[in-house]
Length: 141
Image 1: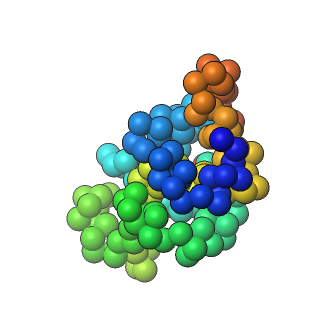
Image 2: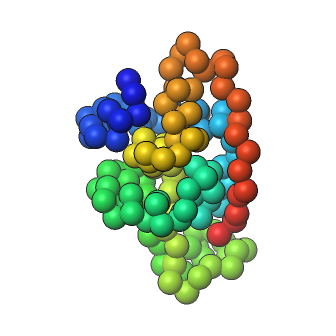
């Protein structure tokens, strides 16, 4: 399977984007999650894949239904305060949050990210042992 096939085929992405395949994300770097959760922010997803935030926003716009099925959601400030127990400064507009499976799907949809290409390579059993983490500048919110 090549990365272009994943970008173009919904059914291939559905088969690939499973909770079992999210372990590849740990092999490629450090993805920062919100405190005591399995969710991360758009800013952290962009930093992980080393792409501009606008690239992630565009993918969310174009593939929102897929990402929603993976657990992506936009939470209001009050929802996040309850969810995060109020220990983090949250923007008034709320925040889009991505679970691991949605982060994996973003990697399947990105065309111009070296990290996203490694997601596919490192997911194949014969290449899994050779994968090394990439470093990236990571942010919190």
